[in-house]
Length: 105
Image 1 (spheres, helix red, strand yellow):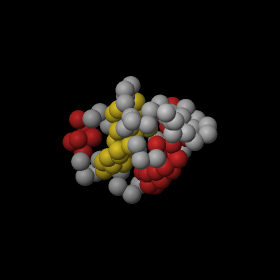
Image 2 (spheres, rainbow, N blue to C red):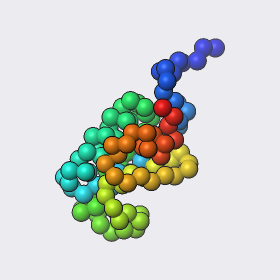
Image 3 (tube, one colour):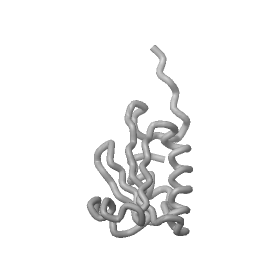
Image 4 (cartoon, rainbow, N blue to C red):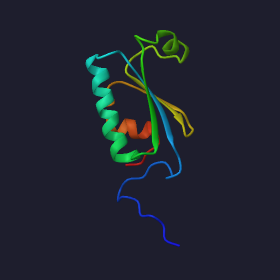
């Protein structure tokens, strides 16, 4: 039986694993807009279609952000696969985001 070849140099969660993330933003604040763009590029390159992303605007859902322990935006939380991880900022440091997501570049 032949296995489907992975793209050279990119390893992430197993093909069957779905990465579940939440990105907490503040409306159209510059860092939030940049975080969305940076995460979109990383997901496209490394996760393809093996992820779900929920974008939560803390200005629209402040109680949810508070309940989830979010006090700074933008904040990215990886819910699964375990271990869970959190990273704060505009996600411009690609290597830090990849580590938080459990992806080896």
